Length: 620
Ligand code: SF4
Image 1 (cartoon, rainbow, N blue to C red):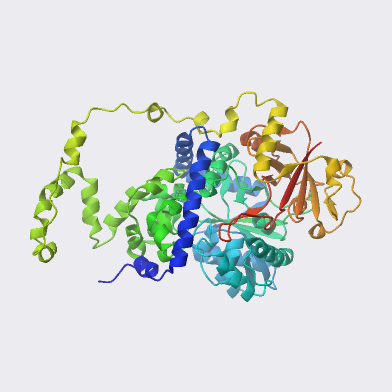
Image 2 (image 1 turned 90 degrees about the vertical axis):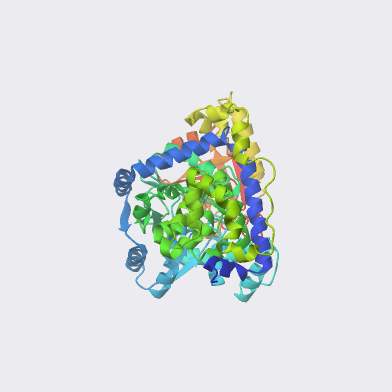
């Protein structure tokens, strides 16, 4: 009998890969379990609220897309529509050719949408050099491999694998030290950021009311890819909309906690259009490519709710099948339970219906999904839809109680007829013992549902924890909270005096200069050892700072130097992420939380991969 493609692919997977995937997936799952209750008072209510908001987006998608487009255009973002992958590739290449007719480097931030459309191959064919700048994606690219996880692309590789790849590519001396390997990648990719004329990214959330694009990441490569080059192209699936910026206060921690167990990612970059005339850096053009590629079809069909997905990867991490077979076995850029529904729904049950069998139907994916997508229910439906599928009978039975009961009554006859007859000729099937489950279930005394199940979900219960703390208005308490959060992330608070010990040269932003009068400054931000910025405010609950572009404010000063000093005026501290978001002006901004980091190489946490490895906050 011919084995399904996923079984064929997984059979060839080395044991070391299976071990690496299992270890990392278990780590992310444990981190998620720990993070959710520490971020939300009621994680269940947060998930329910998130699902409601995203369902509202799907219900009003055409209107929200129009609203988003109008807001983007008003802020100077050029909007393009791509019906399918081919049109998206063509649009991106046209923009690239107009920006850089001679070809050259295209700095790419991690993006599932560009993986989906096969952008790298098309760029190469058109004479460009696409360079993946996320550490994991970079390893995938130099190995001519594919990502095997939507959040952790080299979950299937060990640090020894990465060491061999870097030595082969001449990035430096052979080493298995993750920190040294990270430094090699940083040095190599710096040159690419500096020479790239174009940067390409995905979009995590696009805000319909303001036209702002929110990009989340931990390394800093996304910000560098969308800041250093002259032109930024963002490719986004049409379902990635949120109605308001307020919604981000729920979705940013929910995504980070579900994906990697963080309370917020290191950077949330808010793109509000090209650089303005008075701003010293940033791209002069920003393009947004809105990608359909089968999403409208999914929206109109029975698998619509898979479009609620925010690409956290939690369902992959808990899936017993994914842990055994890894991402490559799925034969598509979207693996795991997410891919097993999304891929056949978008690209056809005939070609990809077999993916729905790659599940034990244990239900763990639905339990962890931050937007409560009923994945097992959709997998059963897909199995039923797959032509000639023996699972169809099971699915029909499992979803129709009367059919199921009749089947159970006939079950004892099964060994005497049909394909089991030969097998059972010389074997005695086990006898059923004890009471039937169904009879036991009906005979037990009624159980009163727990209060938490009865309670209606509300916005308050969904809010991140710190927003409800009493006494949050006290500035000293807020600073103490901020310091504790920052130190957890290995950032620190210092006095201006202490900074004198830091080696130069320094890059000091214009609006910070009068408070930070060092003379060892440089005109080349890329050469600076220390960058100094003045923050809009600090956020106590996450240990973050809000930075924004402006007449005397660079974006690269907060990114390129290995040490970042952030001056925060004493009174500019707020309690919650929601308040921090509300403080942002309409300019391109960032919420930065601790040093740049990665855990891509063998799960080892390394600081300073692309952005600053040392973050020092000074109260002024
Ligand atoms: S389906 Fe749910 S759990 Fe899986 S990646 Fe999407 S949002 Fe995360």
